[in-house]
Length: 251
Image (cartoon, rainbow, N blue to C red):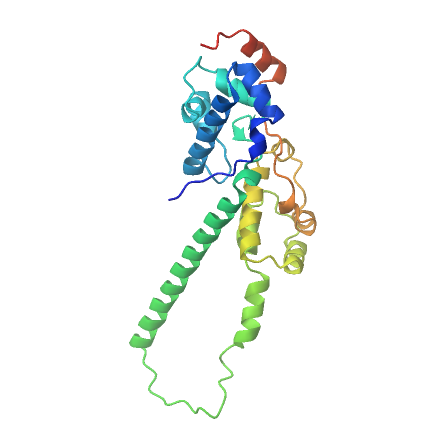
């Protein structure tokens, strides 16, 4: 699978990069190299939400190919703002297109598999119970649903069931359905919605219980929010991190 990550030219002079260089006592070319290595690791292992909690600081530094004092890079990345706790800051902006493409492809595969499975079931049913009658082609079959009407109903609700399962606050489903039909998201937007939920679940507000009502979230098109939200940082304050860094010998 091809791995790529968006890297803006401004990264070299960005204040977060300068802060990381100052904290780690390294040059910009080293800082960008470590960050790029870390982002590539995320693309391969936790691209949905960029949450590296299960790897811990040792895994984060190994992913970044950091060979200095243990714990220093992870602390510096948090202090500079490149990490929110164990989550890569602004991940949806950095890898949003790739996330949308991957989620869309997954959904396409699932839908294709379901369609093929239904076709097999129909073939088996037809083989088991053959129709011995010859239909009158001049009389419309009223038992067959209007395909155009059925198609409109399906498209209006496309993706809602998955949204409802993924969204952590499930209240007033009927109003949420009305809002969903009004928004009428297409396939690409549905994938973006799921990516946004995965990121926002890690935010301090959501982890603290301040989760918008689903109808409000849909009506406000909150999947379009900037996703660089702050997340819980494992109990380490910025000041404590700075004290830790100041006390270290980098090499």
